[in-house]
Length: 496
Image (cartoon, rainbow, N blue to C red; front, side):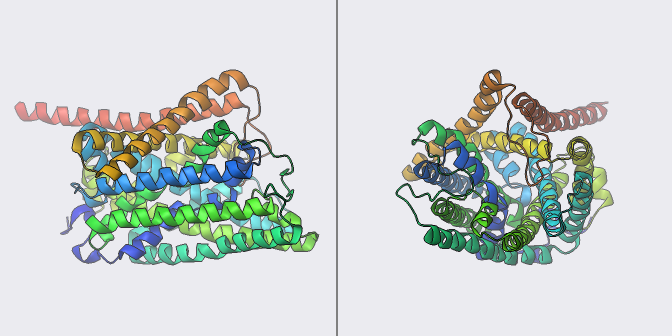
């Protein structure tokens, strides 16, 4: 094998400044959720402006606290730099938990989410065509185009990693164009239509009916809010490309989380002032069909471009962490794969393509049959919930066993760990079990840009959610079992 540093990354590859790394992480955190996430937040809070704002403020506080704590943990050196979260978990929770993460993080989190974003890119692309031509494509076209997108970004990140870094860096800057457009448009429409005492002007999504401020509603929508802040852990996957990673990684994570918090809260304020809970709802104020159609095409084009940048960042993280996992010999078949693919990141690229095939067969193919993306949406919630539990557990153990934090950081660690584990528990127990008992046959919202014509009932959503959890965790456990069996056979052969 050619001479390499940790993770197969050449020693001269530390070309990312902390600022550049921050931009890449911001790009991974701020995806398309900024355009649509408030639909559910508005709905759960009954369109109460204070409830919506408190939801985002609490979510931002949890996110920043988590970034501070994990940034401190990231300062501990790992065996392989780009192992990221898996390396951090190994340091804090031990090798068994680390081995579990070496399969979960690159394949079930970064890999699955990168493929999910390729579907979003495809949906945004066909949305532009559909808006312009009034043609509604079958989900099969969307799925096949998404495969092409995934393969393209895999190839770019394997063969042109520096180009990929630049693409993500400048892509993040581009994202602020539609974000500022949304904020400005919301304020303009609020000025045109007037703002009443409740901060709503009666927008296009039923915002005349305003519920009382509810703590239960705020807590209920927190998982949805927190999903918008996920993605910061990608910092660990690019640490070998960052100059002075011991200081750069924690600072980049914290800076990215603060910027993301400001963006989400600003967008929420603009949507509250205008009374529109999503970017497309703003078009309802225009009052002219042709102008409204043109506005929606422009917005869909922005979403398409923004999703391209997010997908590239997630693919970068997936390929890098898969490469680390292969070089650590933590995934089945890794020795043969690294022997076959000796160049930097090529083993990671091979595993990414394998992941693409498996995800297509298990998750995307049923979506094609149902002609909608509901299964992919529900499954993405499942893996994010699993990782919230991991974040909280890791921070709590670091606080108790390793005494890494200052007094202020310890307070943030207690808050962050309790909220992360609490939110995961809420979703796993209340939202997926207790609520299922009471509302089994009630319709449940599921779907991304192409939610399909069929609305799933709550028991169907719960079944898909738990099946996804079993698939993701089961894959990691199966890999651990196979790797352990392989090691046992080697030990027996050595003794003989």
